[in-house]
Length: 288
Image (cartoon, rainbow, N blue to C red; front, side, top):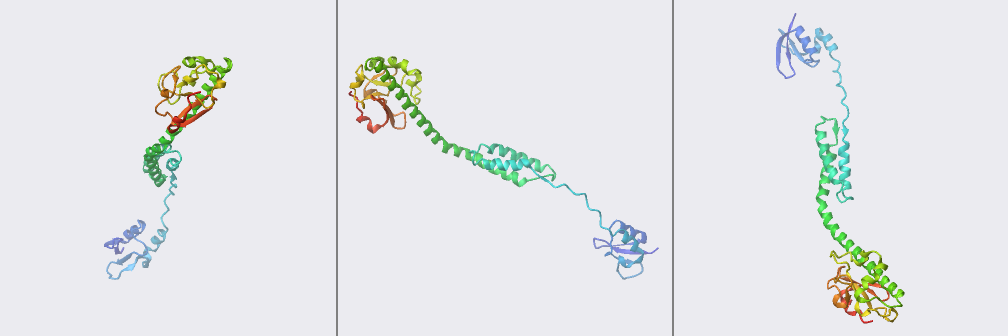
């Protein structure tokens, strides 16, 4: 049986190799039809396919190797998608959803890295994490923008409640006059006189005041016991004051600083209520 020299896939020469050894190379796919070999005792290198003694082995091993089992396609991580969606929604929720989006994004990144290719969507998870983080950082900015608006809205609501309080107090005063032959209540006991008509004592409290006084308003002392019909309609009747229950007097009892953004709430003898600016206080009528 002849021996052969063979050029391997690394370009090196191997041999002498027996005929059966060459066939083993073919079986192991270390040699193919393009492999060069040289019979012992000759100097000519030929393709292995040129040697009839190896044709059967080459035919048997010429079929391509079986394809590897198909690998299932990686799924996109639902957490990654959710993270990005929640991060984007942070724009419309002032960052409220961004915290959940950040948590989901981090979890998604960890799971994708540990999935060995079974999960996809690393870019989505990273984007969701970044977007959520950005909106979380913007929460203080949102707060700084919203707080002044909320404070203004609260102040406006307090102002409206104060106006309603004085309307009810003025109405109760006029109801008292109707029940007492047109006579306005005594200034020194005006709160006691109208309390039954007012009902809830909280009407005597301005919502902008935290003090423990029972009443945050005062009665114009110059209207003490007068006939309502003889009092000029634009005369001050009830005004904001810090002097407590049954407080009565004149402009000296009026608060010296506005509770409602430079507006003073004043009720007049005709039952109307106005919000008066500080510059207008000097024009108020106190004499009936």
